[in-house]
Length: 334
Image 1 (cartoon, rainbow, N blue to C red):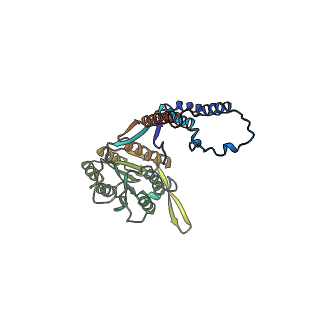
Image 2 (cartoon, rainbow, N blue to C red):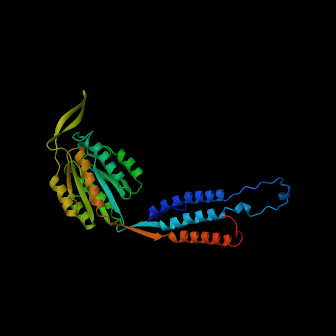
Image 3 (tube, rainbow, N blue to C red):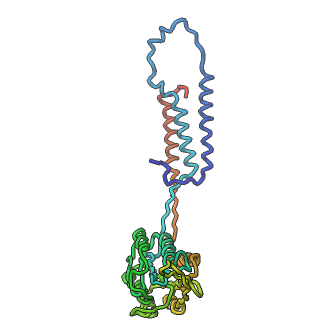
């Protein structure tokens, strides 16, 4: 057991006084050596019958007790304190659902290796940086579904994230359906902060729920939506399979920024545009900071003085030395 576990010292400089111990011991040895005499005897037979003092082995009790008392006294002067700390968080946590577009246009390669893979990689980094939040995953294309419900088991979430690919569902871009499904996953959430990160590279082309209607539902449920438009400006290289192998053609980038901005504004979120990998990573970093800023954590510290036991030990040791010197070892060399 570690005697000083969780202990800090307010005045550690007093430990330099422990250097007095070797000085004390050296003086004690020198004094004893100089007080020894020499006696010449013709025979030792007369001394063989002398009974040995059973306390002889304790003749150095004085210096031992004084040294231990000095150690205890110096420790008390150094003011040992137990350091106690804890956190009081003023929020119940954050629940986040990431809604990701997996339509065919997400295979465009203006982000590397393409929009979908870049989104998966950077979102995974975001998840790993938020170990205390429940996070879920919704994917959408022509329809939408929940790939992973809200969970604190981020290893499972990341594995399911890596499994998503284009072609899992019918093609199209149902932004409203994707947002509605994500908001529905937060319906039963008791978290103080509920967030959807909606990522797409196009405009709403299908689905039974318009994007603005889904945003109004999110607003009523106090769900904040961050929208992210993915894609360069102008045209992007898109791979096309031909009998001669993969060929690239330039396709126009058509992101409905007006709708994405309105969704964000309605729900108290923010719209971002990611034209390359670095900007997408910066967007996730910014969302990470925005949401962390909403958690108020108070750190408490409490220190308790622990010098009294050491002072008492020093006093008891000196008292024992005094009593022994004046009783059992009275007149003995100590």
